[in-house]
Image 1 (tube, rainbow, N blue to C red):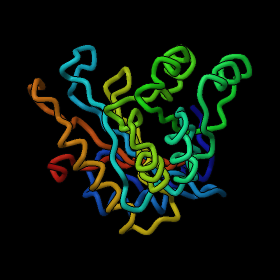
Image 2: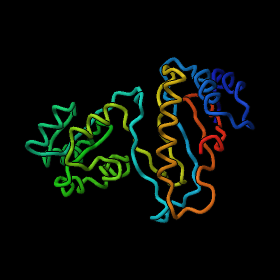
Image 3: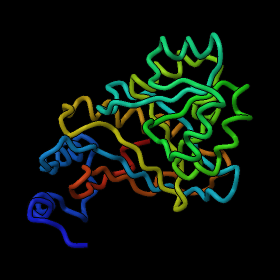
Image 4: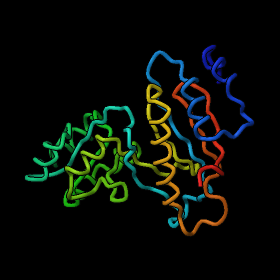
Length: 230
């Protein structure tokens, strides 16, 4: 992959052989975010888990204290009073069965998170093939299948993010924007790491956090010393 001048300039400041303290890594990543837009800062956490085993799966959610800096659009599957609660809490889209053909036939994906009440999961389940590959399927572990839709919507709007292993046992999550202060990014990062440490599967033997890298959307990654993350 060819990188542009700005990337190469930013990369010069990062020593690929060094494992940085979290605070130093955050300072470097902020400097490396030189794109014309407000880049997202992401954490990439390589774990020692084997996601093929159910008892080594990691999936959960955490509210970042300073949010992600992104406007999150929420779709809620609910009826009657629960639908009203979702609307009042600020959900952009609320509905039931009538949304199925819109999503299936019109490829409608103008939302970032999907929440559903448990009684609606039979309906939402019919969208599994469409929502599943996009990571949009509601899940009780992530707090997106719940009767308390108002709380779910408010938390998502406040900066709740979901974390899960990908096929290569890596977790990829945003921890904020390049415009955030170093303190805000550090708070968000530590909150995420605390949640992931708590989620360590008891079945896992050996190293849990194999490597942790943070990077801006268009810039180089900075490796963090995992010994400082216990």
